[in-house]
Image (cartoon, rainbow, N blue to C red; front, side, top):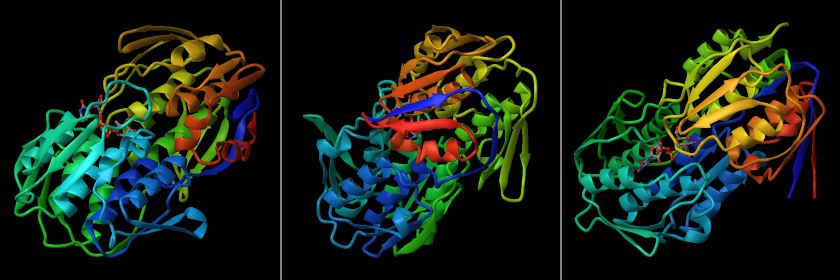
Length: 421
Ligand code: UD1
């Protein structure tokens, strides 16, 4: 298993290109099941999660070809005859559950193993099931698999979600594109990845309005056709790399970055004393001399502060002047990075869904262990400004969601290397 070694100290300067959004791509790829014609995605990030989704789709009979160094994915659902998503692939990644809606729409039946993924809480599928049942599916759980059938086909319905789940919204929207009649989805998730999926589905001939608001209206159509769609920039990778100069000092331009993808996060950085400016090519983040200010953060659905940036923000606040309170409202059990940061000298007290971070002047390098995707990158960020060497092990989590982290950070002057064990 690889390790990453970060030697702290030294400001970061230069440019970091932002890749296509992992989470958008993981929802866009299953849309290939909705048509017999090819779906081509461009600006695809090269990540192990994308490879896992590719393997899952292949197992369902989709032809998946990576072109242009894997930056372009050409998928054809024409021969996709299998409707069973096996545990062996699904357990690697929760987003595998995004084949449920498309499989149901295509075959009128689907058998999908309950997913795995990051160990950040229970993460049930009840909202997905509720929505798909409203569309006419009959779903039951047997031996770890969801068995879904729509004997009379899917039919448009009015659906009000108990919580605006991102994955449930994506599954329901995809299923509804081919349902008979109109679906009105209320309390839908508003994340930019939902808008990206809706844009792609519209390019395939779907009739969808309201994506990005809390009510999405989908008029079912007979069939969808092929399309080519560019994946939107990854706002979580963007926010992560915005925090690199914020933590280490310096001035970095994030190529392809957009402030509208991270409104609350950008406000919080400004509150902490970090300069964020829009440039022609993206966003520029600078930290001048002096300590940053403590800020309070509460994770919320979009446009609130993203839960996927909470661990990285905590790494920043470890050395702020004063006490910051971080409240995690989306997932339980998402402070597994806190004890690791404490090994580096951070002063953090976790109680339930709240972490109090009392800023210290400097963190110290230590051997630490990554426990999930975002936690692992938060330890690398913390290591950028820590005294001495930070050795992050179990970086396979990192490779699920960040491509070439050592090249991207090394390119702006960070001392970072990957060692094979
Ligand atoms: C997506 C993102 C993930 C991000 C999360 C929240 C992808 C591939 N992943 O995950 O990186 O952290 O949004 O922004 O896009 N819940 C239920 N029942 C359900 C569904 C969800 O109780 O049926 C709960 C979950 O346990 C969790 C919360 O709702 O506590 C948010 O989950 P959801 O919005 O569905 O996240 P994901 O789509 O899994």
